[in-house]
Image 1 (cartoon, rainbow, N blue to C red):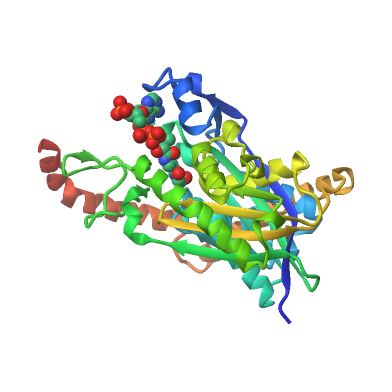
Image 2: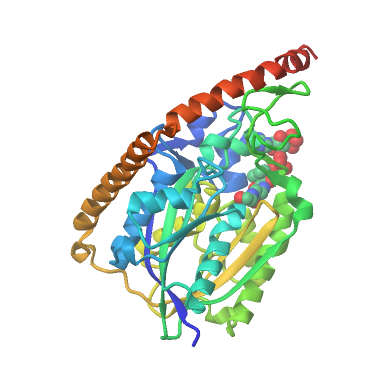
Length: 404
Ligand code: UT7
């Protein structure tokens, strides 16, 4: 029998540092009026230097587990949607698994840009429906501030950092994720992209010069084209997901869209012939947080008591890829009394999980040393030596490119 995937926990994390439009206007040619009028954004949060995409994801996940009141060992799968991982591998999901001590969980990252959360929710619901797992942690997390060109006013004013997480659990009771529609159009990949340092035929290190350009990995966007694409697809995919769930727009209590631009949301409301009040918006406070934006908005909507048991909610995302998608979810939980959640006890477990992780690393190093194999540090030093030789080979090429 297929199982229903219910949302039983949610949590978010925003870095303390707030960057206002006025502050931005001191460093780049823009102004508060333009940003508010053209995007709806007033401010965004910026990660501290000791925060990473994985550490903020952990904070959001820990809060979601507190609400769900389950232990990390009950989680069977962790899916992290992000475009700003610290590493190509290990995945951010594996780092979160380690921080939580989720010792029975599979973990992987999912790349679908700003639609990542909707994609991950759909994958998680399918994994639960087919009973391959019963509890899944879905996280959207981004440190967009690290991949922005802070001199490019067409992008740096838009994005912010943050993380949001939900816990899904299987049940035979009808409800939870009722439909999902996922779409993509790779022909528009060049409209919004974040190159890696590996995207040239000759692998280069960040900061190298290639063909006279300073090679960087910052976001590149054709804002007008992406805007046009978004206004074309958002209303349609919402309508399709609602129909697929066997509902009509009248049955929908709240739509939680990806927070990219308040004008995109207004356009979708107009097309669907519904009031913008039925769309939840927190873009003014957080900006565009890419894959984190929908779960962050969900947490705010719950905190503001905009969701009640038996409400039907639509999540809709769109962005790089191009990708877009929507899910309809029956909301069936009342926010719990957090006093009774035992979060302190769970926090102690995370400290223990980190200690266990360190111990396992130490054990690995010790047994490698006893077996006479090089330690990871020695291997890195060796690789570095070889890298220096390779860089030496390329020195001439790099110098001639710089001269050009
Ligand atoms: O999350 C993934 C999905 N991303 C999106 O959905 C983003 C979609 N795109 C957008 O939201 C909008 O296109 C932007 C907010 C990025 C730009 O707004 P726009 O209304 O499309 O502006 P524009 O690019 O057409 O530029 C209009 C004018 C230009 O000046 P001229 O040529 O008319 O003199 C720009 O140079 O506004 C100027 N401009 C700015 N002025 C002050 C562009 N950026 C800024 C700025 N401050 N930050």
